[in-house]
Image (cartoon, rainbow, N blue to C red; front, top):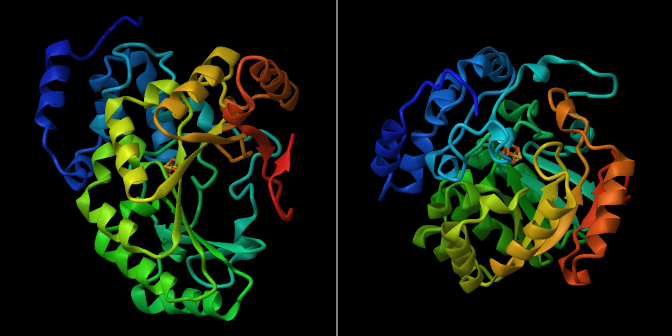
Length: 344
Ligand code: SF4
């Protein structure tokens, strides 16, 4: 525990109580968005503030209260805190770490649309996130160039209509569920009118970060679509799954969604076999199947999270001795230009 604690526990408690009964939009608008408030809310030493400020200038802090509630007070080693606390190391520029590690800019035939793999395309349904994860491979993504208006979506939709080999639309972002339900319902309606589309996949962290996002309005358009639904959550540590997340997952399943999870292997977050095994077990309790364990994409600002390939392979070998096969995530890397993820 650090010295110079700069918040009283009672203050933390009163802030927590004030969020009860808020809508997801209110919770998002009350998210902490500056390093001073983050350190204060979590009782961190003021020693961390200068680094947090430096990191924040490169990629803004954003953490909602529902996620903060799962972070231990005054514990700099908390695995959830490590994912959201900016550090001075983010300013380092190690060789090989770049702003667009997956070279997505080369695969954008229309505004808001990325087409990298056969049979599926990715739509940037929202430029916003409910949380800013420090390791995010899109932390430098030019969202302002990829936020289509309704009229501009037509170009992306025409692209989808004209290619009958595309069977799956993937809503991504940012976080697609940060968009309004009205916007999402409209987009899904457009997609389901394309006969050769079979599946709607949603990559999101919102049901984890603000579980109240899975409300009746979302379940309305999700339940109604004819498209098969897959929700891919992004959970890196078992502490992220509390009862509110489990309840949100149950609601998604009732709406007919298959729920998968992808994690990123992150130094000082989940780089040990116990954390990974516990995560898989907990995911299954929540009705989620482990899908991928990604090694870090080499994005500028995130090098301090890196785990070597050799260590990653050793971890997965040890994990295999602990888990049944259906709880084993696939260890993969995304290599620009390849037609699929590459197993390690
Ligand atoms: S896109 Fe996903 S990983 Fe990146 S900051 Fe947003 S929620 Fe986090």
